[in-house]
Structure formats: structure tokens, C-alpha cells
Amino acid sequence: MRNKLKCVVVDDEPMAREIIESYIAKTPYLKLIKSCKNASEAILFQQENIVDLFFLDINMPEITGLSLAKIINQKAKIIFTTAYREYAIDGFNLNVVDYLLKPISFDRFLQAVQKVSSSEITENNADFMFVRADRKMVKIDFDAILYIESLSDYVKIFTSEKTVITRETITNLEEKLPAKLFLRIHRSYIVSLNNISSYTNEFIEVYQKALPISRSYKESVLQKLAEV
Picture 1 (cartoon, helix red, strand yellow):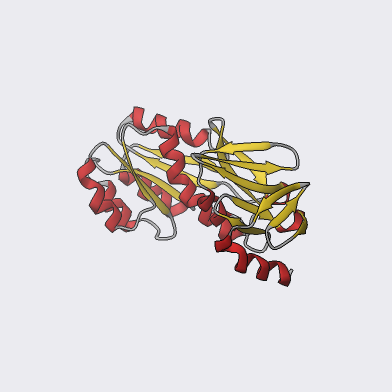
Picture 2: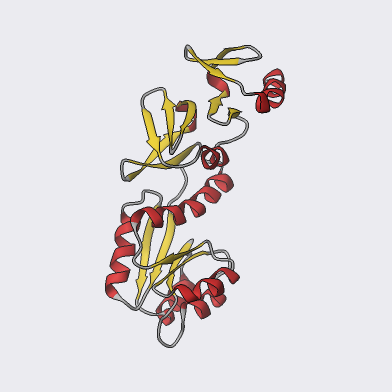
């Protein structure tokens, strides 16, 4: 199983720290290892500890979040948190993961950390992913997925045990899935290769459900199936 991402919160406002701390506590793949009230405290902590992800306030006394971002370990990911929109350009010039404008909602927080978690899943070859559903992050094992269906503004993930509904786009989900196990057959469908029971030039059958192969995907789909 993938290790949790070790997180450090740096903000001179106690309430702002508490909000991010609570969000981290509600996210299964994150672990808070330190909460700092200034940049100096964060620098000292990082010298003796491994940090995967920093949540940095930008407008802090003495050493700003922008200055701190330039001197912390380059392997650590950074998400800026600030009440000042004008710092956005400077933040993105430092190649940070995301820039969160206060007040920060939990949904927006999850959007940002998903960018980090997606890359971590790829790097660690995990056999599962987390998706946002019912106001929490739900773990889904890749080998349990039968197929995925996109329906206007939400996506249904059909597994052997349940159906999970998420607001993520099917394209975002496709990026999280290992290509050797899944196949996009239509703008609205992704299927598990291991769960295909039969197919024709027009349809793929998964657990007695016939899913259409669209014209734009037909050539690549049939080529992939011929190689399996």
C-alpha cells in the first residue's frame, strides 16, 4: 500500500492552520507531521525530517512563503494558501502544485491535493486510487472496477461490489488508471480489460452489459484487443 504523504502546514494565523489541519485529517492519503506558525520553524523542521507536501501561507512576517518555497527541499511539493490574489503569478512562477485562495473550501483543497496524489500513485505503481464521493475520499481497487461511465456532469464507477458516483471527469480518471488494465472505448466509457467477456466491432460486453465502441476509438480499441 502507498504510504501517506507527510504534510507540513505553515501559516502565522492559528485559524487558518486549523482549517488546513482539519482538511488533512479528513483525507486518507495525507498525514500531518508538523504545523508551523512561521517560516523559520518550518526550515528547522525540514532540516531533520522528510516532508512530501507543504501548505504555505504567502504573506507571513520576516520570511514570506515565496521566500520559503525557494529554499526548502526541491523534492517536496508545495501548495500555496493566501488571502491575496495578487501573489498568484509569483506563486506559479515557482512551479508549485496549486494556489489556494482563502477562504478555502474542502472541495477546492481536494482538487489541489489530487494533483499530488495522482503523480504519487503513478510513481509508486499502486493498485488502487481515491476518488471524491459523498463528501469523502473513497478507495477503489483497480481490479474491482468493471467499467466507468460518464454522464453529463458526473461519472459512475461500476465495481464488483458497488457503484461509486463522483464529480471527476472521465478524462481525469483515465489518467489515474493503468493503461495495461483499462481501455477507453468511447468518450463516455472506460472498460476493464480483465472483465471483458466478449466483443464485436461495435460493442464490448462486460458482465452482460453491452457497451458501445465509438467510431473515433474503434481502430485503437480493436488493435488493443487483438494484442491482448
